[in-house]
Image (tube, rainbow, N blue to C red; front, side, top):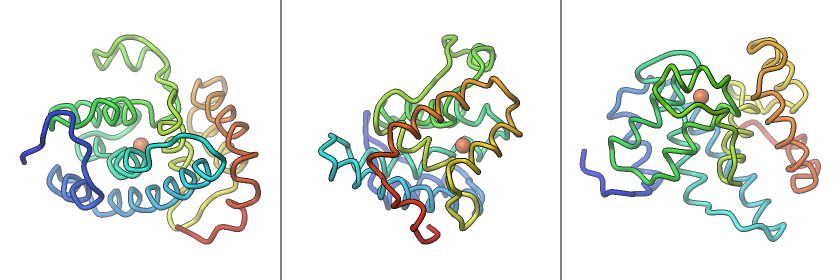
Length: 186
Ligand SMILES: [Fe+2]
């Protein structure tokens, strides 16, 4: 596949990339749903006067799980980021993919040969994709509290992602209002 250095793929290109790297259909369906929700959150941020790169949010949401073509578990975030880098994609996408889990225990990054760190979402685009990803469960959009409870069960108490996502939720609550509760499934 040809990709320009620092390239930000269009929606169609991003979907082609998911297929070409061998992402299973269920992962692609999940990515499409996350992209739908993430772009809705991004538009709400724009309406609130925040500066958001909508194209980066959409491409990031579509590609956030590309690492699942190769590995399972938390490592898929770093593997996906490395795949994006190998494809010559925009470094902002590489970082977004690495941070989309909401945070890792620093030992995970080290095991993957990445500089040690928590990999908390930092930019608004990174936060939007990490947040949307946690809310999408199959065809449903979970209430945040339910998504957080599931995450606590999965990751165990005291995991950095739980704290980071709770902060992101507080940041988005006034922007989204009740919009997510009334949202139809993605
Ligand atoms: Fe993921």
